[in-house]
Picture (tube, rainbow, N blue to C red):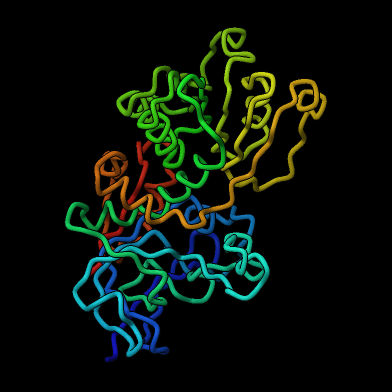
Length: 338
């Protein structure tokens, strides 16, 4: 079968072009998905504004997607036409030592579908069977598109052994920070404090169960927070919040770095040494999609409240502008396709 595709391509600073193409199955182990929902992520926004640390123009947009299977290769056995799916957009080689050890997020040739010309902001996408996950009717297409960022949060959460008696700080009240908030709450953490810049996002964190919310743009008594937390999740990716993490963490505590840093940072290594702090990076996800789907389908993690705006694919520029507008109160902006 041949499908008439249209996909969004960023060709320069805030410049979007649509590319039309015909696509059909290129391998017997692949499927074609008619995309229903595609969410704008932080990487899409940074690509649009030229701030992404790892991509150059031109670049295709979109990797948080859900849709319906419309064609399957001859060797596909686990999926059928008409089934609802979400995708894992990371592409690994399967042959390097990291892949053979099961740590495919460290693959020597790790890439993503959008870097291979397979855009999520498109009408159709071809993916390998093992990169698509069935979604039940418990989730709508918009929610299903957010499984990918939930998998990022799940991976970060599972990096450490969290105790019920822990006091956890989450710096950043964007999508990942709000998902980490929910993970901390459903895992019974005694005290969860979320630091952010936007009151509407912090208020949502409180609705999710955060015991404390603190606006970093306002004055607060840092002495009350100094050396106060067993775990700190840094989900922003700038020098100021990295420094804040070191102030907040207790002796022998753990800082989990989730936000991507565009620029080089400096760090007070004497604080790291004196406090015997453990700094842990969290790279994407690795075998986390099944857990993320379970948490979403069981409603343990609430995804719908994160969705604030919806647009058509044709209005992708407006969607991106809303997503980067600090006055729009946007969290997750979705493009509804097909």
